[in-house]
Length: 284
Image (cartoon, rainbow, N blue to C red; front, side, top):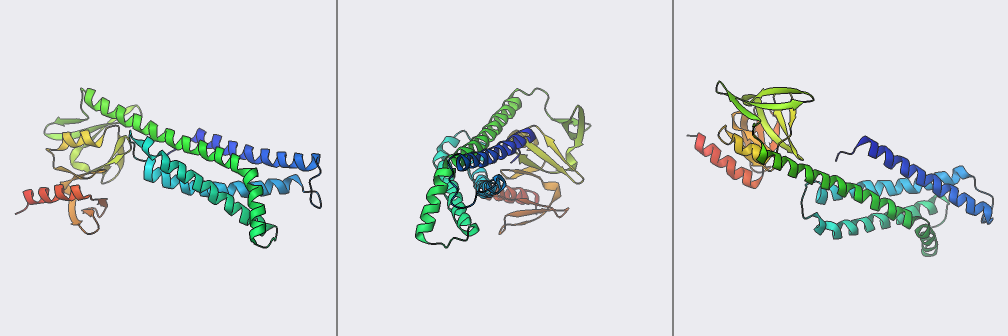
């Protein structure tokens, strides 16, 4: 998952601002209405307590966001709206777990024995104090993830459109030596097709893996597969297009392919069928 640096900084500053606001707000109410149970509490103690609570929230949200991204949002899909029930349920679970954890940590920090009454009282206080702000922050995070996912979908569709409109293909043949033309900044580079070990789908682009280096090409793996079908390139996984000239061995139990440079690439069930056919056609 890749985030813009400015967005990451903005999120961090926003969370820091919320922590400071919570501490200032609590200090204001304690001082104004003299709500101290015993001795006055300094602002820095309140700030530390709120920082710990938001730290717990942050840990649970990172874990939850990682799950949601890999399970529902990482692969662009036009039907992601169907996953919203799971996303909302996960968000509720994340915040409930964070609130319960904050309650237990607060009791432990204050040396309060864990009883049903103490847990219930502390949880009620934390619920009214943090539930709304935790939920609001989690919602912003989920919207950010959803926006990144939709951006990837748009980029993928744009690449598909470019593939259909493309008049000068990235694959060219010169003196019977096919090459791949890629753009690096403002420069163009030609890579010999014979040097490519395999192509890997990378969101809306593909990675070109050679013996010495990897390159990025703004093209879909599906369209590249069609262009390379006559050059001994086999689709072995939804994310992998293999150059059979570098094939070494396959393990059908672990679904992995080993290349002659000892690197490994994944193999799917449909890819295994394609590989078996390719091996049968070239073996005696």
